Length: 508
Image (cartoon, rainbow, N blue to C red; front, side):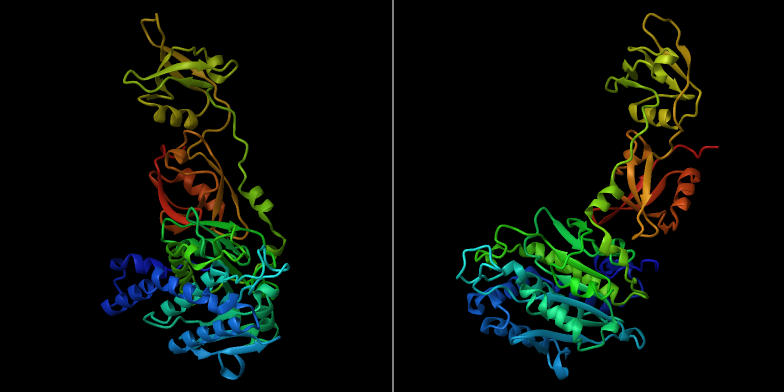
C-alpha cells in the first residue's frame, strides 16, 4: 500500500502548515470546505422531499421532476453530461432515469481512471405493501432515504469543483433511479455503462445520512480494498464523528452493484430509524448539522482518493467476511494471572500499604502480609501506585521487595519469584489482513504503560514516532528496544490521535 499522503482535510484544518501553497490556493481550499453548509443541505432536502415530488417514485412524474432538478444543478456547475449521447440522462426501464455527470481529471495519465460517486434519488412514491412499512396511500417523501444522500452528493460536487485544481483522476457523479425497486439504476449502468466499466477503479455510495445519532456514522465496504479504514480515518478530522466499520456486504444499496464487478467500494450511512419507509420521513426531521459533518468527510475522502498516486485494488475476501469475523479479530485475549497477587489501600503520603495478599500468590510465598508498607520493589523506591504497578510488571524474576511491617523496627527484605514474563509496554495485538502496516490491540494490561497512556482494547496502532512500521515484528522490536517516551499514532472508532508511552528503560 502507498504511504498516506498529507490529506486534503488536514490542509483545510491546518493551513498554516501548508507552506508550499499560495494564499490564493489556501483560500480556495477553505472555500471548498466551507461551501458545504447545513443551510444548503437543508435547502436541497426541502426541495427533494417536498410533497410536489410525490415521493420521487421511479418512472412517475415526481421522480422525473426530481431528475430534472438534479440535471439543472449539474448544468449550473458546468459539468459534462455522462449519460446517453453526452446528455445528463441515461434512460432505462419504464421511464427511469439515471442522472450522470463527469468531471475530467487533470493528470494526463490518471484521468483515464474514474472514481464513481453515487446516491439514489428515488423513493417509494405513495407506498405499497411491498415497499412501505405503512400507512400506505400517503406521500412518502423520503427525506432521509435518500434526499439526504442526494443533497450530500450535490454539495460534494459543488465543493470539489471549487478546488484550486481538478483532482488527478476523473470523477463520475451518478444519481441513481430505481434503487427502491431493486438497485435498478446502478445495475443498469454497470451492465450498460456510459463510459467503460474497466475505467472505474473505486465506487463511493451515500445512502441515508440524515439521522446522525451520537455522532456515529456507519461505514460499509472498508474491507473491499486494502487500507481503506486507515485512509478514511486520515480524513476524519472532525473529532466528533465516530466511525463504525461494518464488515457485512449485502445487496442492500447501490455500492453492491459495483462490488460484484470486483470494484472496491465504500458506503456512508447513518442507520435506520422508525420513520424508514414511512410517510413520516420528512425534511424537518433530518439532522442537517450531522449531514454537514458526514458530507465534509465524504468530500475529503473523495478528493484524496481522486488525487493520490495509487488506489487500492479489489479485495475479494470481503465477500466472505462478516461482523462475526470482526468480533473474533478484535476480541480480547485472555490475560495472564497477576504477577504479585496483592491489593493495597488508596495512595497516601505515607506510601503503599497492602490490604490483601492472595493465598498461594508470589507475594504470599515470599512472606508478604496485609498491612505491610512497600518501600522498595526491584531496587526502586516506591512513591505511588502507578510506579508500583509498573515495577511489578517490568521486574525480572526473582527480585526483592523491602517492606516495613508493624511491630518491626527495621524494614524486611524479601525475595519474590514472579510468574510470567516482564512487561514493558503492556499490550498484545493481532494483525488485520485488510489493513497492512497496522495492528489491533487485543489486550491492554491494567497498570501498564499502555493503559496509563490511554490505550484501549480495539485501538489500532498505525505509526511509531511519526513513521509507518510495516510488519508487526518491526513494531514489537521497536517497543522492546526504543528508549522512552515512545510516541504512537492510534485510531479508535475512525479517529486518529497521538499517545506517548512513558516506559522504563529497554530490557537488557
